[in-house]
Image 1: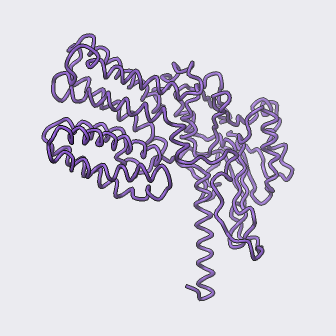
Image 2: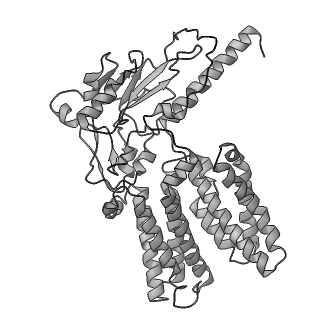
Image 3: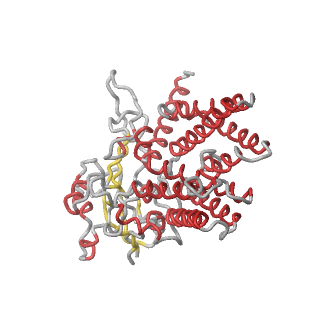
Length: 459
């Protein structure tokens, strides 16, 4: 029998007793059990929705399958347990979980997550959040079948959450009349979490090491791919230039370690190669570094096509880390992905130039399709327009064929690739219940408002 939670939205009064009990019982950071609220002012037309939710202890937990350090285990009762002593603080589980359950503790550098008060439940006592709920809105339940108990707006990416919601969309909506000065305003994103909302600039600042990691790996891969295509070393000589791919790969691995909350546990990153895309990425980067090292120390011992194949597989493994968390088809068409960026960069150095022209056209089409990026504020707007302007400017600069304009074109071309890679990080948006709730009920409000306009004969 799987253990899980049952939540009755009608009974919840958002007193936050469940969240406080979770913190006091387990010593976890605030927000481990999140309180979601929509239409807290009880404005007419739409429902008042409260939702208390922590880990849903899914039947196929994405956090556990994606964790490279194997820091998660699943008990016979379906409870998903996180082991802090195994966690290296990469945060990949926070991308994979659509319910915002695992959260990084910025002080300790590791993940914290609801473990269903395992010690209490082993003794037959309910979790602290359940026993603290004064209205009975939150309860523990045991069943083999949790399917078909979630509203349409609740994200289910096939991981089968052990969670039941009752009365989340009541037929009889509360009819309240706000004061004349009160008007409907969509709530900000940060109300759906105990953590403050972070903008795009904060996201880039937080993920700078990942962006640097991918750019360095792409650069090293391009050099090795070009060596494989040409059948000779792309960088002649045996000095600094010849070991540049190795240095780039080493720098990338150092940057990736800087991203971890517990850098000393980075060796655990390769433990879950079978099911974790992140583990496979790290293994491929290590293999790329080994190939670069051997090619520098003993040129020719590894066939250049083999080295090029390793480089291609490495950049693909980078993309798969993101595609496994955000499965939107539009992200797979994004020209900021590592695979496209590496191939596009390689066309700059290859003949015939028709390949460069074709990839430039594909990049231009992608930019046009992503015009919405310019409306999302900074830094997306700046990066987007820079990427859009760089494409035609590069062609204008290479046309004269003089050394100075060629150098400027080269700098502008690669700067455009970096900008597109940064836009990829900003456009990367895994499913998350905060956004699902917001989108659904905003759409519900607009639908109800349009209906009232039609009934009143207004356009």
